Length: 124
Image (tube, rainbow, N blue to C red; front, side, top):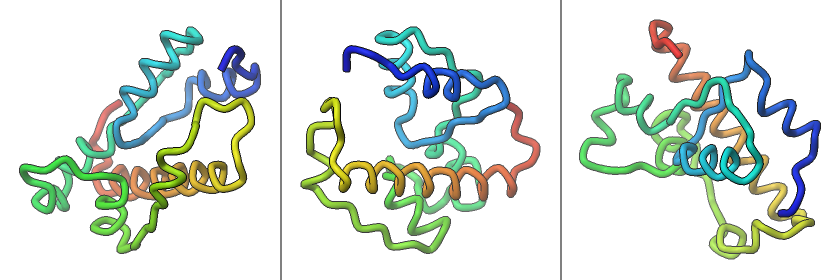
């Protein structure tokens, strides 16, 4: 991508926002390096889950978002390999890619919300 939408840059830089995800550090580093974005608060769902009452479910493993959704939310999330492996660098994403990204974001939000609600003492 050779540009970054200003509105999205403003949203990602909002100081009261907390961004959660699996492997989110890689995405944050890439966005910071390529577009000079700064994130005020980024939380790794795998780390949060490991420190929660669900942590014993993930000993000696590196759970995926699908794994976390199954254990923490009780959701069976089907993810198409075709969409996962598609061109995410395209200037225009397909409807399936947009749907996939929205589902990932929503599930990440729900897991993060549940984990943070369970552990209000977590400081970030």
